[in-house]
Image 1 (cartoon, one colour):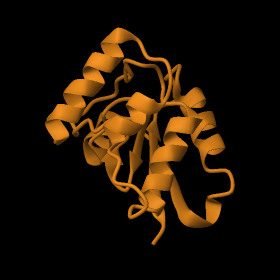
Image 2 (spheres, rainbow, N blue to C red):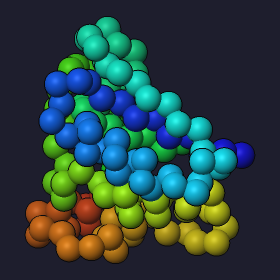
Image 3 (cartoon, helix red, strand yellow):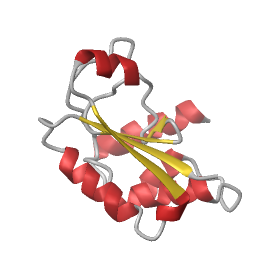
Length: 134
């Protein structure tokens, strides 16, 4: 079974190109194991239809890369990532986890914590995320 990636964004977003580049790099040599869908969110109706969390957003197998639920009132908005836009290495690790789930039982929060230098606020956020999942 292929891993589903859905990249949601709008053109005015200053970070959508960076996220797209990170996704593109993270899937090198994995193209046969994933399905990639690019969703341009151009209006409020589309935002509501896709449960838009803000631009840029990456869903992996329908789940937000940071575990953020769809908002009650989706709208065209920029997205703030406490530790910055997820890097290609982080995205790649999560994809590999989905491809080979039996090899490791790591959670997204573990991968994010291991992914490199983080600001203190980001670590605090990720610990809270981990506690919610346990």
